[in-house]
Length: 170
Image (cartoon, rainbow, N blue to C red):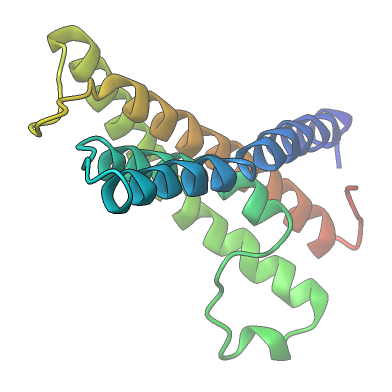
């Protein structure tokens, strides 16, 4: 494989590894927020209106920003009817073909995310709830997460092409 592809894979995987490991800590923030709400409601009888939305926003950030890292460590869900029976080279070849569908899907999501984020920023879009938080931060996070997944999918494509040719990119 060309040196540029190797460098690309190395840097994209390094970025996704750092982002993924930092985002893993969001689970503790979610636990803290939900625990705070539970104590507030049961002990002090003071319900908090923003808790569920904040939990949903954090969960979306958690799985979208962690998506590239999940792909990198091969912990994503895979439909495995025939795939496991293939040799490693045939798996890599199959993955190169399916990568085009994944990249197309992620490009469409990225374009939609950028458009939606731009709209939210331009018009000051807020959620229609009692809390009414601005939506641009979560839309921006979602767009960045899809972008990181797209970069990781392209890195996977390069790795699969190399594997199909009998090489490895580490």
